[in-house]
Image (tube, rainbow, N blue to C red; front, side, top):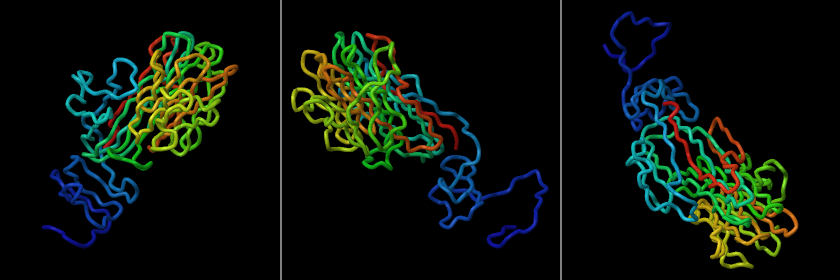
Length: 377
């Protein structure tokens, strides 16, 4: 017997050791006018799903049979203002082997199965020199429901350059997870800001990558000296609304801010005083790190880190991110680069400013990374 229409009232009891046949089909075959409580088996994801009427409207029922966990890394052996050109052997013997391609330094990855995914992103640290430590990159974590076949761009920021002298360094690159080809805020999953570049000892205040600052300016300046991690400093004006940082508080406009998400404004613009140095490029402008003068290579990291001049008492570069970090030039005060601002469009958000940091003076600053885990169907 089959029942195509009608209702069954009361509390029916199916006294059998067999099974109840329920609707079976793909995601594309879901009913056009579902009702809250509708139940079916989805052959695309291999689990039962129920219609809840809220986003996501169809909720999978069950647990992940084979959990997916992987870490995307910068694919760089040292700091770089441009993105990687080869995946190399980084993902050999991992679930990412053969699953990642490159486009302009951005890693392209296709979601292997529908469900809830957690992205835990870390921005890159600002450049470190012989006396001061670069500002730490932010940590930003969010959960998202993604469909099988969706394609993402993942950019793991490069740290600012490790300078061997006691002078200005470049900002750290932001780390970005964005839907492929995305150009609007709705296409962003998470952006973890990079830290600001260190400057001269005693005149140093690079900012941490700011985890909480989604729409305002970049992070406040913080000392980069390892012995004064939490001391307040001074920073220039960060970008706002997803744009690169600002030179307007930088003496003689000499500093190089970090890049943001959107094109334009100060993104990758040459320094008006030292034209060989540049601000970091925003994500939609290619995300290159800003250039430094030729003798020091104190460039900003890939992911929009602003270039450090390389001389002393000028300015460290701002960090890249959703909003680019600013910069300030003060010969008698603090003039490290400012950390960028972050963005998190996920649920269950977790965020920490300045989390990704190597506190060793003269040590290689930390690159960005993204840890990805499937947490539910």
